[in-house]
Amino acid sequence: MASEKEKDQYDYLFKFIIIGDAGAGKSCLLHQFIENRYKKGSSHTIGVEFGSKIIHVGGRNIKLQIWDTAGQERYRSVTRSYYRGAAGALIVYDITNRDSYNHLVNWLQDARTLARADTSIITVGNKCDMKDKRAVTFLEASRCAQENDILFLETSALTGEGVEDVFIKVARVILNKIEDGLIDPNTMVSGTHTGSQRIGSDSGGEAMSSKTCSC
Amino acid sequence: MHLRWGAALAGRQPWELSAEELRPLLAGGMPLKHRLALWPRWFSLPPGAVGRVEELCGQASGAAAAQIELDMPRTHPQWPLGDAARHTLRRVLLACAARYPEVGYCQGMGHMAATLIILGFDEDLALRGLCSLMESCCEGYHDAGLSGWRQDANVLGELATRTLSPEALRRLQVVDVPLEVLASEHFLTVGSRSWPLEAALRLWDLALLDGPSAVFCSFLALLELFLPSVQGEADLEAEPVELFRERALLGLAENPVEVLECTQRRGGSRQPGGHPS
Image (cartoon, rainbow over the protein chains, first blue to last red):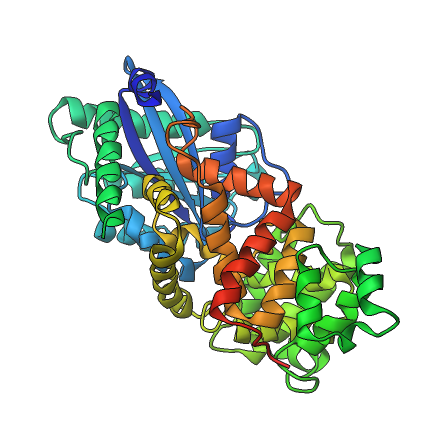
């Protein structure tokens, strides 16, 4: 069965969610991370886009399962259900758009109230290739991240600068929490699963559906 | 396709066909000129009910206008919509935001409006088509809390449980994404964002005739036909949900008739013959 191979393929599964204002570059960031190139002429997201990739961090293979959400505020109502299961949250703003940075506090509040307390959060200042249009300085964003006790990096989904670092940085923090015993990777409600845990859940699903068939 | 229509029409105009004569033709597609003639007759809102784009488009709120502007180049960027067509799209969305101030602009409306514009409707017909779809198929879907959609997502869940095969239900469980999330794009754009254009137009033929049941049945058809099997296609990199979307797009591009016929079969038992005149 494929699950046996899957078990060898990665040690942990982490769920990530990407949030932030419309037009901040969330989908381009995800596309750059997964495909290693910029997505030209990309269409705005309706609902959620899904992506996944296996990365190698700290001697472990980690599968990231990523939800890229629509930025328009009203779509928050349908993505809320996913926060609970997320081990990592990326809050993206556009360094050339002051409003998108100002809204960071709202997104952070969403993440704090809806996600679990041990969800690792990073704020990502995207479009750092557009230096002459910069409206948010590195310094102030960095201070803001310090004050709120979250991680911070700047990226360019266009050039790829910093993009992989974001995902690796968050994954490393989560991995450290697991190794320090702060997160139990075997609890399904947390946004991390071990490879073998998933196999258990799959066969559980099978048993359940055969039960519903009989009635 | 033209031959089939020619034979069915036998010298008549397309709107002279009865529903029984029309339905078997729809899954296989419709010549553009017939769509341009039939759709305005199928729009749930009659001529004059919506108002003119010219009068409405200046009345949209500033917030809606700003969001529309942001999404202007990001709505079907691959489509060959020139500057003039993009400007029409902008005006139609502004007018729609003015007509429904409690909705304003919601992402998804642009994909629907662009579909009507690329087909060749002028701005007033595009607005009437957009408003008709929003009222007949997407009631309350686009409002501030997407409340209509969130209710209908529960209905979709009920229908899935009752009508999908046990195998499809089992596969859906493995995908492990709430239907409210998985199906939001389909319902909030009536398939017009991700479906290949020709397939989307055929879905709209059904949606304009049958209303929301076509939208529900088409998504249930996707679930029945394209959810990946667990053993056979387990992909180590891609998640089941990604495989589902890929398979659905491929299936819709290669064989839209299969999906549309499956949609009609599912709809047939629930809403026989009924369509708005």
